[in-house]
Length: 163
Image 1 (cartoon, rainbow, N blue to C red):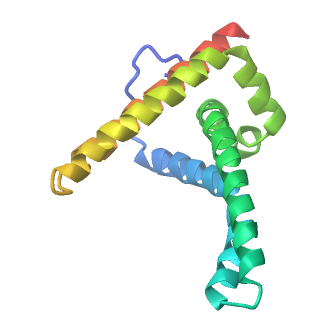
Image 2: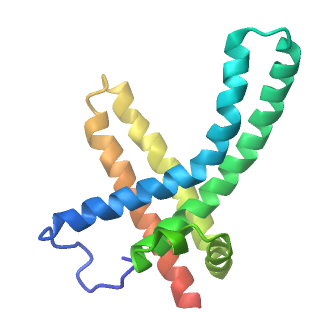
């Protein structure tokens, strides 16, 4: 979708490139989630240790939770942009560049907001598989991820066309 190919489904001839691109997307996820872990892990260790500062640790965890919610909202807006840039350029550095991400997002904010809402709805659909004795997850989770990826691609194409 992002590469504007007339044949939107790729050939499965070079499967290793798909694996490498997926690993790069995983690296992007780790880069974005790393700040949360750097702050959360020590706080949870302090809480589990049961130190004399339980009240302070609880207050810090509460403050951290509020910041984590704000960060996750920002993360939800940046991730589709980063994946689009990665799909087009195949460059992790460009995909995690905050200025480039913000510039691309500003080109089509409505498209990205719709993509995020669609991804949330797809996530709810994938939870139906959990209700169906967990067996349905094997079908609904990949379907939800394919919907999410397609929506992210559409948003990136709209932003690219606006440029």
